[in-house]
Image 1 (cartoon, rainbow, N blue to C red):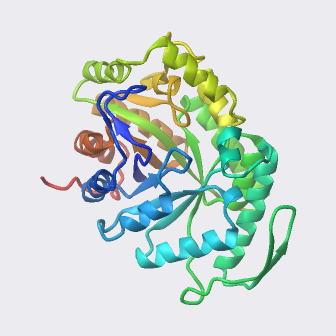
Image 2 (cartoon, helix red, strand yellow):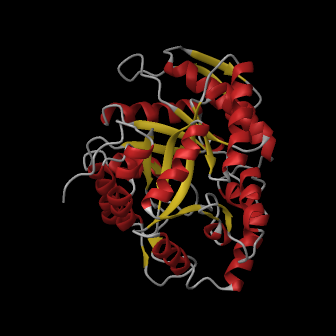
Length: 361
């Protein structure tokens, strides 16, 4: 099991959909979160991408000397970057961080946001572009001199010349559509999914395993979710409700209207869990869909005391999840809370010796 944390490069706060208690994504704050995750024994940190985020490459590079073992899972949108340029950036980051670079390939789901970066491709075509991107990427990291002429990229005599042949960097890849899953099965090392009820996650994993077998490959799996862990389950649900303290019906309506323009299948699946209503938000035991009412992307959280949450995580692990990418509001305090309350339970429940001990202090 690998356990990652999340760097809130778009900002942070104690509550959703409000400026009350909010925190800017200053470099000083992101450094605090990264150093906490590093010292507490998290294996890595996810750095998101998007017009609302700081650039993940620059932030990751700036945090190398501030951390020691923390890996940087850098989100990359292939449609706005050349594969050879991004491969060179990744190889550079990997070299200067002593092998701590990972890459998360992200198609993007908001046509308006993508258009602001000059990308005007429909959903399935974006995945065809990603497939070409990763073909070129893999060949470069194999040390090849690459010539490639495809539907989206034309590359001539591309090479990685950073210390000769570079070590392959693990590729993480999310996508709930058929187009996305086909590319992931053929090109990714780790298939990422947002946290849905275990039955739905099991169906995804089985489909991805079948697709990978057809492609002559094996693949690992990761889960992205929020956590609300407290000493008791009652306190955890109180904390979850407190996150929603300032969420109004208007805020929900505005957010859901914004998300409705997305062509992401994963985003639609998140919306189907809560249906845009405050009603029954516990969509599976301890799995709460309230965050998705006003936040795009990962919209679910496990809520409960440490033993309960560890048991739910174990259920996902037994389905085949190897990597968990956690987050919580605010991310600095919750990194400590999760490390202090949950990680010891995970060592017992999941019997994983590679979950590092919590640092003292």
